Every structure is written in structure tokens, then in C-alpha cells.
Image (cartoon, rainbow, N blue to C red; front, side, top):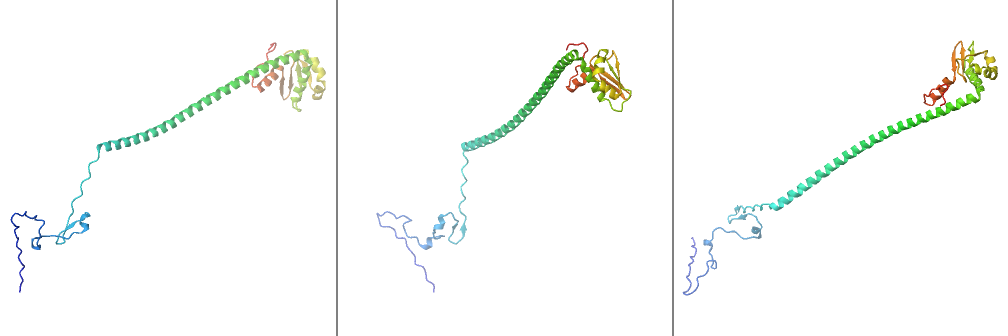
Length: 244
């Protein structure tokens, strides 16, 4: 046995009364369509569900607003400033290194040039000093020869001592004016070596020449002076009759 649903009549309002709002009246279930019970989750952005339980997609999120051109310009300026500052500092470091290397090379070249000039100056000074010393020594030697001519006998003895003991046929040649001094001052050495003493005008005064079977010893003033000057790094010759 089927039961019929009671019919609901809409009763009109009394005369003179304001019509009621359609939302203020009771809505029968038969007039309701799809519905769903409200829950707090429906306000959290989740997908809404229909009365039948089917999930409906939520609304798409709004697109972000376009960037502010002023902010973009400021950011570009800041990035350009940072890049320029970095490039400038890198260029500055490179310049400092290059400049330091250039200065170092210039100072090194200047130091080497100064050292060479100083060495040349020292050599010139040493040469000038040696020349002055030889000039002074030459004057002293000439003075000694003039005031003490007997010193030629010492020269003859030194020349004989230089000669090897195995030498034979020894002859000592001296200037005629020096013959007496050598004969008296070097008599013992001449006798011990069996040497003859001869006068030779070609031998300058103050020196002698020793001849033997094994060689000749030049003990003249000029030769002895040359060796002495060479030991000082000087090539000043002995000039006979010169006052300097």
C-alpha cells in the first residue's frame, strides 16, 4: 500500500500585508535541488563537492601583478654598479702589478748602470793612482841611483842568485862607471859562481846583464821597472834621462 505525500499549499498573505521575502519562507525538500552540507573546509580553498559527492574544481589562482618598472630599473642599476665595480677593481689590480713590474725593471736597470759606472770609476781611480805611484817611484829610483850608485852591486848579486846553480860560463856585464862598485860589493858572489865581470857601455847605469850557457838574465833598470809597474797594473815605461 503506497502512501502519498501531503501536498503543501501556498497560502496567500492577508490583504494589506507585505509579501514575505522568498528567502524567509520555508523551502520544502521537494523544491531543493542539489545541496551539500557546509563545513569549515569549504572556505579553505579546497575543491567544492556537490550533493552527489562529485568534487568540483576550485577557481584558478589569480595571476601575479606585473613587476614595477621602477624596481626593475633600480635592480638593473645595482647589478651594473656591482659589475662595473668588480671590473674596475680587477683592472686596478692588473695595473698595479704591471706598474710594479715596470718600476722594478727600471730600478734594476738603473742599479746595474750605476754599478757599471762605479766599477769604471774605481778602475780609472786605481789606474790613476798606479800611474802616480809609478811616477813617484821612478823619481825615487833615479834619486837613489844618483846618490847611492853602489847599490848596483846589490842588483848584480840578486841577478846571480836568480841564475840556476847548474849554469856555467857566467858573465856579468855592467856599465863602465858601475864596474868598480860591482867588483867591490859583489866580489864574494862573483867568486863563488865563477863569474866574470865585464864593462859594457851598452848597459845603462844602475843595472846589469848576466849571460850563461842556459840563458840571459836582463837585470837592467828598464826591465826591472817594467816588471814592478806591471805588478801594479800599470804600463808606465822607464824612460832614460826623464825627470818624471
